[in-house]
Length: 190
Image (tube, rainbow, N blue to C red; front, side, top):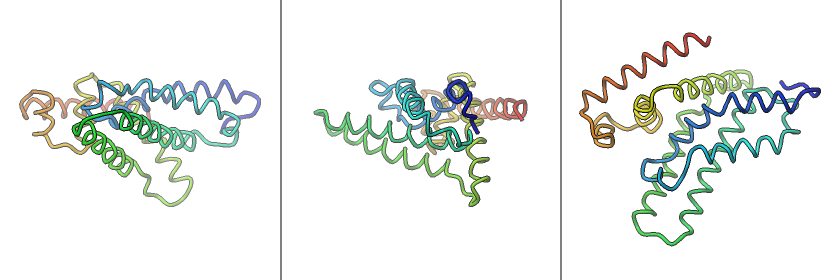
């Protein structure tokens, strides 16, 4: 929980700490087809500004509760950005990509949803998700992309290899090294 004497500074520090995790989540939510028109960093910045704007509501919230709110706000910001694109004149391919983006957002939300029932278990789960997303952001770009595509978007090795223009063996090796790095990173942070 944030204490009232130093809420603003503690919230700002927490939001700064959560930025890498939110960037990873935003990168996972934005399909490759949209990377040229939607910027993960911009969507995260918008989300962080909204959280800072509403900082008075966070005085009794735990970090896990705040992160849960941040994830949901980011999800809404991605969907809103997609709606804005849809309202612009576009072709059939853009509409199909928007539909893919909406289904990806729903799929990732389901994958990250807390399955525990007690509030303390949900908060703990949110903190674990934040640590994992932050660790994913610290991977190399190639490792981060394969982890996001495989584990957050649910792509097959074949689909990833086609997207990246690499063999399935190369993708599998990259994914293996990424998993090893994540185990190492998460082991250090416990």
